[in-house]
Length: 301
Length: 294
Image (cartoon, rainbow over all chains, first blue to last red; front, side, top):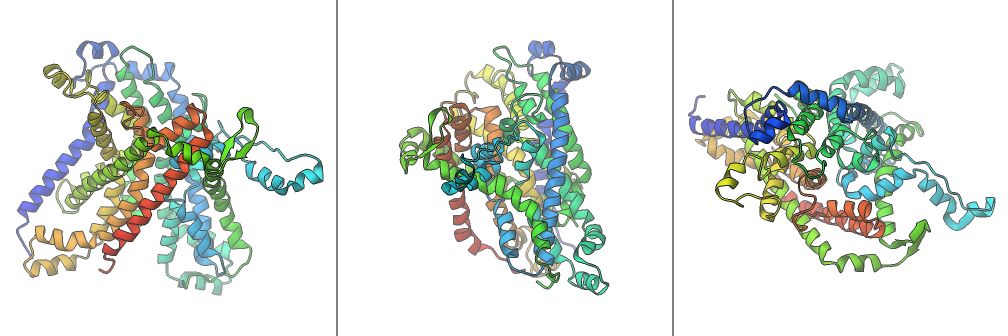
């Protein structure tokens, strides 16, 4: 059937062009500014004429700032968080969907509830826990004073995770959205799969390894990439959990480039840093856009 | 749940245990601790805690700074999530049509997801700098026409612009997926009945998109708050004059700069209650309007 859709198509086209301009313009300005030198910039102020100083700016970022080291930290932390979140979610979702028995709904609810309150809202007490992960052990031991009665003094263990990769990564993993997505995905699989596996004599772990994992490869990699990017762009938690510039992540380092006292900030240098910090996840998104959307079971026809 | 067929007492718990431990330590325990400190006062020089009842709440609720911060938080939650969802909805409706630019747009509109809110904050501060940025020529002509450093309205505009930019992808993905899942037959049936594309947009697409809109609204409210910290810390530091000092930022300053653990924890409890209330209200008032049947 052919109908006249000119007016709506024209409006849609205009909307998309405007949207593209809105999204791309800041990125273009970043790239152009990164090619100018500080002196250029001071002389001409804001200008969309590209300069020739990109290599110089990059060299300065490389030698004079902590960004290279912080970018490495970002790669490591984001990889740990992505693998951790997907791995933890896979195990939980498998237990919730494929096993009989009580408590499954409760476990699922406990994981999904964490989506509603982001880490940023409880930053101060999350910091407290990370500063001493043994806190709950101490609390249980000292409840009612039974530990002191046994040993003569209250239990006071200390296990500080601040300033370590574990301390930055673990709180970023405490979020159940991957569990939600994998449970939804497992429930769409045909129930005959697991039954066939049982008939063939495969145990639950064998079924997980030989059937479920190969089947879930698409969603798992999509989730992993998505979670990698999500961890890379974290700002508030790495800001408080790492105290020294060498330990923190690249986004925090970028924001710290601007705190340079009184003079006019070296915007070209900052924008060069912004490119360095943004490029890795941006390449991932641009390359895997379809796979991410499809893998999160959100359908891209 | 016909898939639940493996029988084992220990194995499922062993599988779920790692995530439950991480969730307990870094999600549930911080919440419990926030409630603990909201009713206790930290003794000076690290000497433990003392139960003080509602004293912390009285102190927090009695300060004018808290109320203006809470008001700014609510305003931000409503306007930031509202503006970004509206923008994403319009873009998704447009990108759902099979135009030449649609595939490019579907890709590019996800790019902001790769840019940290703090990074785009740094970039927008530069672009919208009153003396050096893109609007500087306007300021030369009419001094003071754009100054987000001193004019609170300008600061808010800058904040919302940056927030819309960085919040587009999430809502866009979900809304576009919802639109694409609407069966073609419905479009055809509507067209047969003489409904043009604009009419179908209003009477078929929007009503059938309500489940996704609901999800987006619920999640974007919490998300707008977590993204707000990176924007505020790099763009406004809560200024000018405390106008953009959202609770998320104030808690950070009270806790980490002023070392007021109990005050920060009390405000954390209030903020979590606020978010929970807003989410609950959305379920009560919005979910009834959701049409799940297709």
